[in-house]
Amino acid sequence: MTGLRVIFEPRHASGAGRAAFSVLCAFAAAGIFGSLAFALAGVAPAEAWMAMAQGALGSPYSVSEILLKAAPLTLTGLAVALCCRLNLWNIGAEGQFVSGAVCACWAALFAPAWWPVQFALPLALAAGMAGGAAWALAPALLKARLGVSEILSTLLLNYVAVLFMEHLYFGPWRDPEGMGFPGTAELPEAVWLPALPHLPEQWGTRVHWGLPLALVLAVGLWWLLGRTRWGFRARVLGESPKAAAYAGFRAGRITVAAMCLSGALAGLAGAGELLGVQHRLQDGLSTGLGFAGIIVAFLARLNVLAVPLAALLLGGLLVGADQLQTELRLPGSTILALEAALLFGALLGEFLAGRRLRLKRAPVDPTGPEHDVTAREKPGEGGHAA
Image (cartoon, rainbow, N blue to C red):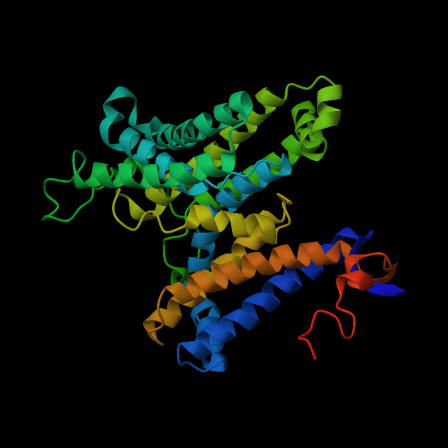
């Protein structure tokens, strides 16, 4: 006797085909589950999607807001993609983002007297990178020395960073002239990230130099991973730890270096958001841009050169989703549902693109319990007496 078994066989799909299929699945999942969420909230899906499109592309200012969000999303996406290429799961980009903002704020508020004013901005950015790297150092050492899961350690440190930041701007760093509102004093203009020059007036002045800096770092990370000896060792470690051990690569050092570099990128994103947009440490700085970096990384399929494009796509979704709250009065959780659908759609697309579904006939063991005649009651036995 034979039965049918459903199996998934690996297949060799082209890189471009797999990437297109993965992105298609991501947006299909977002469309399906987003429409379902809109319908459950009592809004016609077509009306909601039109409002999002109008919010994202309806004016030059909205396009500039997409570019504004793309800068930190690119950096946090690079931070996550770098670790994932090494089979490390940095879920703490949000905490490293916050730590970078806190350190940049300290450098901007309390250390300007230590150096000339012309060095204030680069040193504040460097402090942000150092803060993010330091926040990733402890999980890296725990992973390298003791084998502690970096998923748990980085995830839990997110909340520690946010609570520490709130303690600062509610307490010792609170602006005494802030009329009771929690937040630090406004940062000196010498440490503000300047706006990009020569942009149309309709775009506003919020798009700053953090965006070209993020693009340069994406190219630099591509070069580091693909053209250097350290990058080669890191890729070997990510693809085959046994081969890396056989070659004598020091996995612990590579792990710590990758995690700290990832934290530095996320910390730079936090510093850029503080110095280029907020200009003070306050409530609303931590808006999930670190967590959104996970979605960006997987939309880009961990390709660091594709991360800026994925950041633009997600930035457009976030800017358009703001219209759902202002015009249609939908809750903010709707945006989170769309982000989750994008992530799971990208993961599902990546899984299906690399596998082929097959129905295989498998022989059924006739001696198995389902065919054991002695295990079943025979007619006339085991019943009530006649």
